[in-house]
Length: 277
Image 1 (cartoon, rainbow, N blue to C red):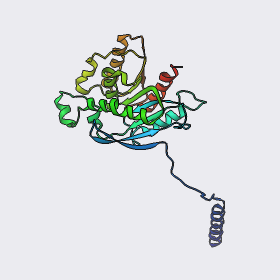
Image 2 (cartoon, rainbow, N blue to C red):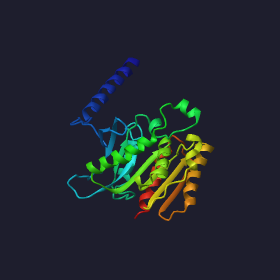
Image 3 (cartoon, rainbow, N blue to C red):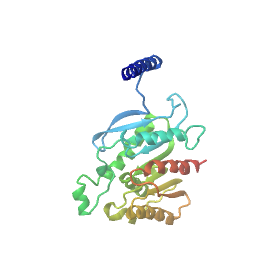
Image 4 (spheres, helix red, strand yellow):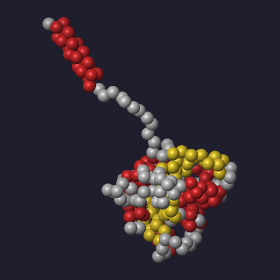
């Protein structure tokens, strides 16, 4: 009896497998999928090659007269934030979402973010822990004198430029806002590492600017120091009471330092770009 049941089971399995094999679809074609292009440029300022990841809107055409705003993304490597931020840009620019205009994304891939995103610090512990740090001035020069002109020359862009930075990238974005504000129209600053240099940037007097700016600052549940510093930078900017500035702050209580950026950028797009309509 047991042998008969076993035989029936084996025959059933054979027929089931045979049926499955017959109904599975045949692969007709397979090709790679890409959300952008990767290019390498030579920077004379930095004296090194730099990799850029570029996302172009679906209907982008060099032959069209249409021009596009540009988002410059720090930590823009393909294994950092380029893919998920470009995905947000694509989603937000769908006509049925209409949260953000069709936009080019320029992801700046890292070589040494501790070097590029930090200014000179007199804190001994910083010098010891981060021996290459303190070269942000040169990196900012690279952005202003080489990268932005390169993008303007090679792509159909308009004058609207946005900078996104988180953590040390948020520190750099804050430094650019304070010292070279005219480089960008919009600043999205998330979880900025303002502890660098004993919070010296919080004591810096921001340079004035004449154009309209939109600034979004966010922080997750990241400890008292990070949370206070983000709120301090917001209050410092708020106290300037500049009429040509739209300023936003958001505390993301359910996010931490690792996952705050994605949700923060989504909220930032709602405020930064929809406020311009």
